[in-house]
Picture 1 (cartoon, rainbow, N blue to C red):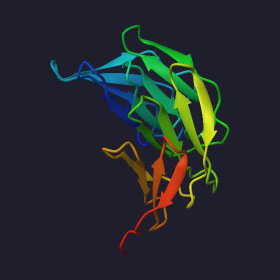
Picture 2 (cartoon, one colour; picture 1 turned 120 degrees about the vertical axis):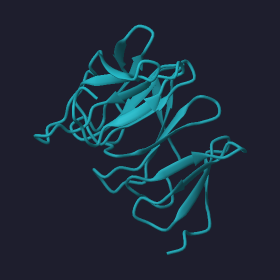
Picture 3 (cartoon, rainbow, N blue to C red; picture 1 turned 30 degrees about the vertical axis):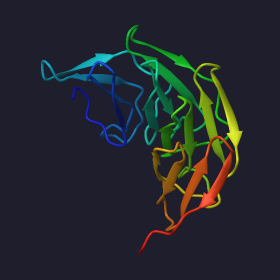
Picture 4 (tube, rainbow, N blue to C red; picture 1 turned 90 degrees about the vertical axis):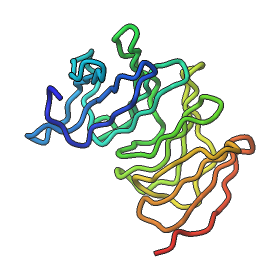
Length: 186
């Protein structure tokens, strides 16, 4: 890696390269720089920098091959997308809620769900629609949390766990409804 970073985010691109963004530098300041790892040649290459410096952010691959980057310290309400084909960034509308170290997952229909934050104790949930370039609030999660783990299940529901609680919540995107799941064993 060309730049030492912690609290960065990484995503495997459709072509097999790995995009690494942001993070905290050795002096603890956030960076907007980004790099890709090219496994075929075993080296890192710098790419276009993000609009905002951020660390403790989250990112996910969109169906069209772009990468959505969300929140992070210093950029809590901002989000942007990276297009690896054009090596450029585009800002999205702001999130309704500041998010640092949120959970993020791509739903089966291509939208993206963001939950949690270390920045605030908040039960709000937002979904990004890449086709419309729009964020929407959906039903609040029953148990607020920071740094949750998230996974999309085969039936399209989203499992949200961890993040400072033993509670497990399941979200049904079709019904915009939460179901309280069995708690994690301590």
